[in-house]
Length: 458
Ligand code: BGP
Image (cartoon, rainbow, N blue to C red; front, side, top):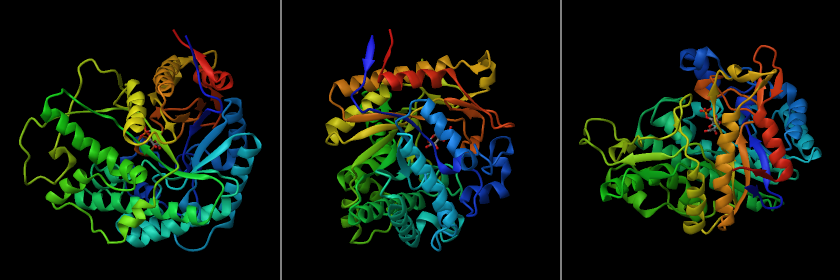
């Protein structure tokens, strides 16, 4: 069967500044943490070199062209542009981002730009990071500077990438700096991130720029083990905490009342100011990026909560391993292609069918060299992964979902937070020693799909 996509569908990939550019003047929390605890990073590899995009941006954009991208998302590094977060703008960074943006446009590849992709300037973290409202203001200033510098040529802006991840990683589950485990502080970080987002949207609207502004959320559909009310309630609370804590403010302009009531009853609400409600209402977006990697499966708790243990989301559910689930064993994530369709249908039916696109989807695989045939990685598993997800995406579109494009994570194998180079996601293989780039089979498949705006599958 032939799966054809609407005209002007966005075909491309996503990446981020910290994971590709390499070292910069301004220190981030990642540099700081790596210098102190290299043992927390796979094979002790930190973010100094990553995939050398700062040096190789021009040839990398040629490769994007070869992959028939018509759009590409990356982020601006706050710490590169404003090394101390709040002071002088670094003119070399302005030159660099101008060159990248201009070259993308010249090659017919629409730049999609994220303002914050996990890379907090260390100077801002020293002030308390997102726990401090001064950092919210510093971010709003940084956003405004970006709009002024690049807003004439960047027409698709994203305030944050996966803002729940620094909350989970940094304040609940100990996989990002500052490695705090404290729900109330996590809730404050999440809340201030929403305020920062809304301030950036406000600044964008006030500047009357030509483009649009949105956010990228990692939506993990919450599936209950069964339709038993206890399981359904567990899934509902997981959905409130991990999806709707950002989805509702950015699409509806307010928090779900039952999330607020739940946190209030456990005395976990952040401190709010009376004017915050107006600000949040002004943070409604034009375009939603959806990152989809895995579903969340939950069931009601099997045992009683230990009231001495720290308050955590897991007070309300247990994770559930569905028998027969398909796994990506390298990343430990379930592969469930229909999830992409369920997300789109939920957006259509419950959120007014917003303009959206899949801004990340992908599969990290370890030791891909074993699949080399005639000098090229034959990653058939990735082609299957993409085409399966695309068939569900196609079904969503054919049923009226407003999905405008599909971006993969990522174009070249890159550095991956605590996993460093363990799992490779790219359409293009990166040889770490020589920095040589070689297109994988999946890259060729994607290039053909983008060119034809369609693909064939049985
Ligand atoms: C997303 C992030 C990316 C990227 C990807 C793969 O959550 O937006 O930055 O890293 O996941 O995940 P990982 O690198 O943890 O394997």
